[in-house]
Image 1 (cartoon, rainbow, N blue to C red):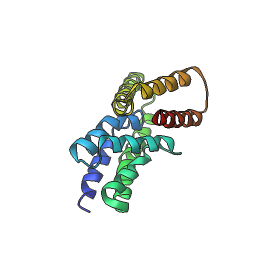
Image 2: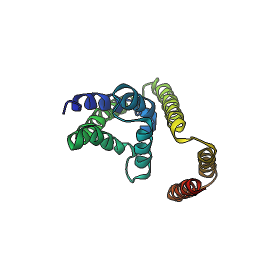
Image 3: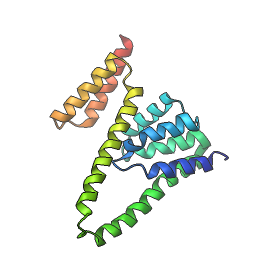
Image 4: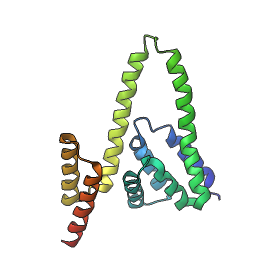
Length: 174
């Protein structure tokens, strides 16, 4: 139970960093869970994040698994509530302000700036995750192939996940 307050503080803070999606918060998620609190190893976090990416629904629901890992079921509930509540409140307030200020002359500039920040955070998250996930020529080849296929086609991502799993098994057997 002593880990619940640090879980709540960490995930409340992370909640506010998800501009651009959950991947935008990944570098700080890694810093807090691996380096600061030592709740997980880097490979455990990569595993949990990968599972969250494959599971249906919001990919950041993997925070429930981190909370459970750290403090059981109460930790899972605390992490999820702490992660969702601040962002939900912020979106509610910002949405109401957005409607009131839609004719404000600075609105377009603010939107352009926020989009740039979101992209920067997203790329930083991808690079941070990539350091742990791309560990050799085989994983680099799979990551590059998936990147190319996604950019050039509209293939169902589930097929890419299955192909990646197959490539991992074949690479392990080889």
